[in-house]
Length: 280
Image (cartoon, rainbow, N blue to C red; front, side, top):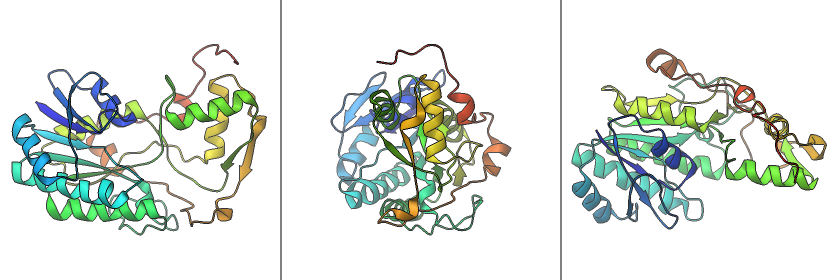
C-alpha cells in the first residue's frame, strides 16, 4: 500500500509517518520545513496541475490530508482541500480529510457524526467550507473531525510554549469555560491509518479523546507531567474573547467505537508523569 500524507512536517503528518503500519510505503508533501522518515515532495497544494502531476507520479492508493495554513485560509484551507479532493477523485485515490470540531457551534453538544457544520469562528468557517468542497468533489472521502492534538515527548508547539511559561513563572491565561475532547497525537494517527485502510470509509468520523476538558485543566495536567508549579495558570473566560468561540465541543465517537480497533486514551492518562523533569 502506498500512501501520500500532506503536511508531512507538521505534528500530525510527522506522527503519521512514524506510526505507518508495516508494509505501507509513505510519501509526504512539504512546503518549507523538512520531512523525516518518508519520501518528501515539495508541492503547492492549491495548484491543481502540480497536485495532479504528483499523484500521477507517486500513484498512491490513499491520501491523508493534514496540511493547512491560517495566514491565507482561503488558499491554504479551502482551495488546497478542494484541489486535493478533485485530484483524488480523478485518480481514484482514497481520501481521508482531516477536519476539526470547530466546524460546530458548541451550543448543541454532544455531537454525533451526523451533526451539520455551524461554525462561529473564522477558522471553523474555513474548515466547514473545506468539508463541503471535499464532499462535493470526492463523495467517497472520509472526513475526520478531531480536536486539540497533544504530544508530550517531545511536547507539541503549544505545549512547549506553555512549559516554557510555567518554568519562567509567567502568567498563562487559559479558558475554564470551554470543553473540548483532546486526543494524543499517536492515538489519532493510528486511528487515521485504520480509516484509510477501510473499504467503506466515506463520511464523517469523530476522532477525539474520551475526556472533555477545559484548556485550564489541560494546562494543569501539563504542569503535573513536567513537575512544574501550576500556580501561574490564570483562569480566563472565553466570553471575554473579542471573537466568538464555541463553548462545548464534546463529540460522540460512535462510528470509531464500532469500526476501529484503536481506542484513544484520556489525556489525563496520556500525560501522567513519565519521570523526573528538570525545572530549568
